Image (cartoon, rainbow, N blue to C red; front, side, top):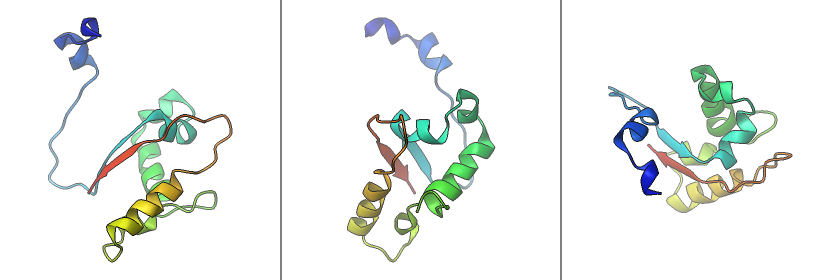
Length: 105
């Protein structure tokens, strides 16, 4: 799609920042975000992302067990991968898209 690869179009869809400290960077597809952010306005809400990070992925909540093993330094990479894979199998009515995550800690 060469007509989409134009600097002015890329600049509209890209942002960057410099941070002294961060816990992780997550890149994820709509198969993961759509169930947790059913409204487009929620995707741009820092509070919604904080809640999703803490209560959905990191710690879990009453509806979702979370992925505690991927944040535990005592677990092996295999255990972390298995925990994340199990988490990605969550059920969400009406959301059946592929789910891909990249987590950089």
